[in-house]
Length: 430
Image (tube, rainbow, N blue to C red):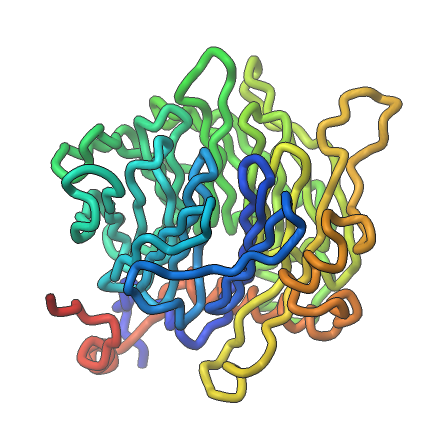
């Protein structure tokens, strides 16, 4: 008989497939895809693959990468994941300048607005900070805040850099003050954002011209995108995605229960474009934010081929970049040597306001920047578009992985104690 105890912080991630990720440079100078432990980078200015090198004396990624991000000015790129490594790269040379060892697996990362600090969150809900400048450069990470034993799923800095927003699988969003010296300063809670009825999967800030702190967007497993006041945490609007997206039919009841979950959100700074990826939808939903009325509105639904369900999004000034793919769901040697297939789709014509102009379109493979060179480097193959069955399996794998990560499991007292003794994320000795 199962006990009512819950194993906090447990997600058995090592046995789950990690979704492919994509990040594009703010000025679209480069684009990076992460799948499994691989980083695939492409220079969009020179139209060539980027060769990554490491001067940090740290090991390369050896397990699934869970988050990647550029700094706001594009000078830095960071990656982190299940191997407990946070790697920091300079993008002018694509040399890794620092490898930080986390005590536990890393679930989210971000770079402070001025590029002085990198923050990362571990699977037990603790957020750590690393300084990149001054006398504290290269010192050990310092914990600055925590979500008590709850996986942090997303982390973003406010537009003015004064606050850091964190979301978790227990439906909560927290906004915390980020002092000028976070290594020693107090970290006061600005507000909690309560309203979601399922895990919060992603966050994004939008900003009006007359408000530096902006508004916060959140996506959730409850099939909603919500708009929040950054100062007091009040809920301003809720957009129900189920009303606009027709759910894909499935015979598997358990999958259909979570298939409407929001997988990712990215937004233009001015809120005129909000792109939403949904776990059951073969495409992207476009919304917009009206700052005067503080409301979210539907703009357009862009559908792609039936087997293509984006796992991650990234927005540049010109285009919306999407990726679908996943790491292998097993760590056996056969899978380690197997090509990790991904698929890239790019949406253009996003900011045409003239009614006579063409609507947003999904580019064909022969229309993407750098063409076959880019696709071969980021996808691993030019035949990805023909792998329909493989990508159907990817979608199932990612949905199962999300359920595995976001739902706390029930264990007997005896089983709980056994798992504690056999944990593989024990604190690393100095």
